[in-house]
Length: 274
Image 1 (tube, helix red, strand yellow):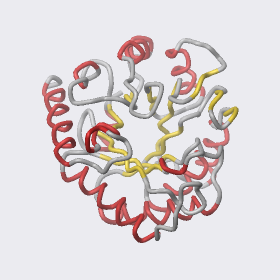
Image 2 (cartoon, helix red, strand yellow):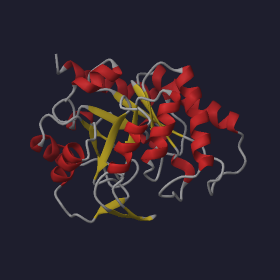
Image 3 (cartoon, rainbow, N blue to C red):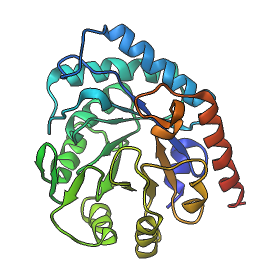
């Protein structure tokens, strides 16, 4: 379960920091910021995270709400432009998350820029979300990945994802099993109910107990103080954004001291594995 992450990130229990992009051209909140400035800010935040202990990055069009089910070419072009510069300036593994849940665009961008993974919020099952109804994209994503010869781009799939409600009403561990065994996801993500919302340790434990060998990521709401609730006994990796920001506010810039604090606490968790 941990081997894949160790091979990709070069260490156990990797920290994957989120680069929340500024509003991109075409999005409701876009106010004309140049792509060069959007990219500069993204690279700056990415460097701050990596220089202070983050092991990988995921680039996300976080400020493009209200999100579409599938993005347009303007978003694909913008994210490809930014991601290519982040990849060029940093040596850690880079991933893509194209919101609302556009796995096809994320795979295309990752293939173009050398990304190592994508995050897919609504991968299997059907969800009711603020954008309407989101149906499984697993079959299309797997076939597209094969068509563009991007098998080396891993798929990290959320289950019982934040901001959405699964119509299956199944236990989270059964949803995780389907995402992994039928949806062929390379790893499964368990999250809280909103951005920055705490992931319930009991949800992570339920998935871990049911699927001991599943590559399992804790996907939201983890703080330095709560790391020991998940690691090293339950999760294999963590995705973190809000906790690394100034005052723990999602819209704020990355705070180097908060990144260092988070990384130091995770290092203590790693030592428990030795």
